[in-house]
Image (tube, rainbow, N blue to C red; front, top):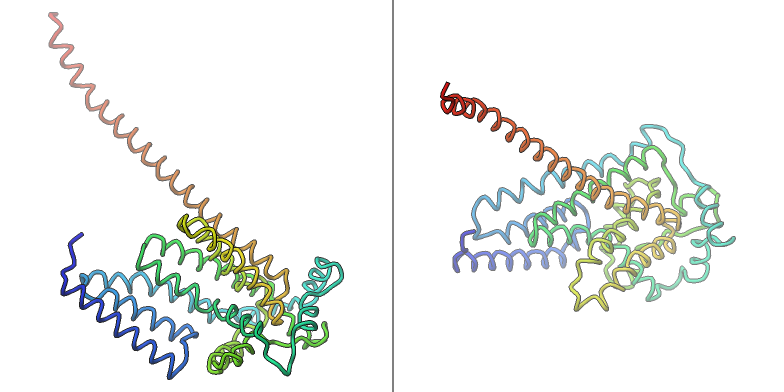
Length: 337
């Protein structure tokens, strides 16, 4: 690989600095770009800024790699309402029974809201819960961008499992639409359950973030509780980085990784967005996607090795066939008769 000249390296640093200033200005004036459109723009522009000073092919590769990935996720966004088109009945009561059975007669969402939710006060744990909830909208994208800059192969593997998980969820949402607790309460299957995932953002003084996320929730699919992709993506982050953390950081980083999906599920249940079983099913989807893709890669590798072995055998056989006439000719010339 050709060395990047000092001038080009300086140009790249300046471009990244300009991008960073622009992002800070946007966050101050418009709010953090939680929606997919703005986040896409800022991530792509950041990657382009990081590529300033490098060969033009690097810029082309950014768009060649990211545009299909983003297009697939947009397709997922706009395909969420397949359940309505298919007219499938909404699953509302089985999840209540499953959670109540799992917790020996107690329904976790009701217990949590009865003991911790105060409609008149935003407690510190409400703010922590909201930050954990919001991290779902940022983490997977930020990780994708960092992986792309550090290791393109790792980025591809990350993007691939995100796409598989998203579309596995989409198919389930379409065929078996399922209601979250707040929806079931609205239909009378549960006592009142408040939808409070973002209320803690008010306590942090970032009302715009709550308005933006609540606005997105207003047009999202209300019956897409199983599997919980919020929990699923948190588990994916934990699985992905658990073995990759440098040994010197493992003593503190690994417990945080393990805690992240547990806290995420706790937040989702407390806020009325999911049942515990939604998260457990989401975990099954993640493990199936991760280990299924690994098995597929091993199968493809074996198939490639088998194909290469067959090719080598055919080449050897062809070489033997080509040698046969020459060997026969030499034998006849050596025969005095």
